[in-house]
Image (cartoon, rainbow, N blue to C red):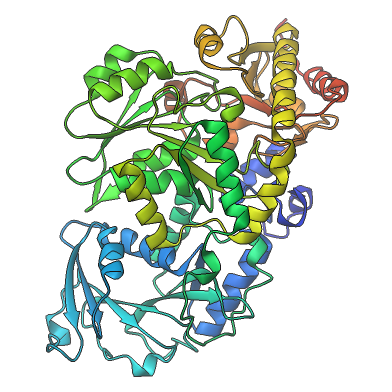
Length: 590
């Protein structure tokens, strides 16, 4: 099936011009995409590049004479993500930094974040080794000013891999085969940096970098694509000028710190970028282990399981919600952090944060809590003893399906100082356009969140009473395993509900999903003001085996509904009734 498949006409954006998700109205469309028959035009913003982003990346690649261009939230973030990937592909890789003049303390700090062995060589001050002396495992990072590759002081890399970090885009790298990668700022029409790009020639690495950007979240905002000026080959001298905190940033931080009883906050280009920066700060070769509590959001789960340092996948251990004995046994001197979600996605389990934080404090291990599903309206994890609180601001805080961003909140201390330093060195700030949009959405957040809570409970009760429904996972229901904890810990249980059908054989499952659902949109995200649903296991864990899904605690036919904050829920309930009426038993069964 080709990229011009008629199925793609069904794949429409949700959230308007800058929508962060898209409709997936049939199982055939999902299967075809996940099996690689064609790429989606639109999808969840970290997983599927928006058409505007694809066009800009293709323009940069063509102009600069390379096969691939990958955009990031800043030039320093682009370099960091590339170096993390290359430096930790295998143990024993050296990062040889070639620079002219004095290297600033800030550059030393920035490169230290990569956690790789660095060798610094000052150009013109000391003789360079012959090209033949470079090892094939050596990464040669040349810090350069200007756009002309002809002026580089190194025109041969031998068996080493040459990366150029410049303050300007090159006119073309086509005739410079020794340059494998070039990182630079991307500017707007005024010459101010609005993001960064990695230009690359190695297909495998650039493909992996693309996948890592999806997972790690240092994304370039789609809102900035129309402002970018890829033809600007001039040096961008004030790299952080366009990425510093504005009035909107400061106001957002003030609102969130008040809601969360925090002392300060940092904004990021996505929720996964916020989580990634925490993990990169806390996990080291000496302390590589992370403990997960509960079945987490799939991208968090994948990031935590797949992190690599020095060619070795970092340790992780899973502990069930409420299993404090196993948690205490799992903590050892190699443990870097404990991570959980206030309300887990998709099963709605709730950790007793008071009990967990008492244990982590006793062992002096940071407790990190993703509070996205609960929001500070329903829970303030810092009050319960958490050390860091993470949000995807793209969800309930926005509600519009048109914003992407993330946040970390904390109390003051050494860890806060480290995160602030990392944030500054990598320019991991949420862009001004996203911050201004989010600020406008926060005005009615408390009222919307109260309605989310009300609607979520009402839909969960409706599903429980429906004869076509087998199991419902929602902590607001009395028979949910986490109900008692949720009543002690939370002011409300949100509106994300998962459920299964009695008749979930393929024909029945497809009939239920593919048909009409009234006003409910079939799109994979949550926290939307309008109700969305998706076949969660197929969207989030398509390639998982049945055994792996069993370990996660749900079947391949799990459905998830993210109930909106509609003031009149009757049409949503009618849509559910219409869809569930299509479920039917297998022939020969009652």
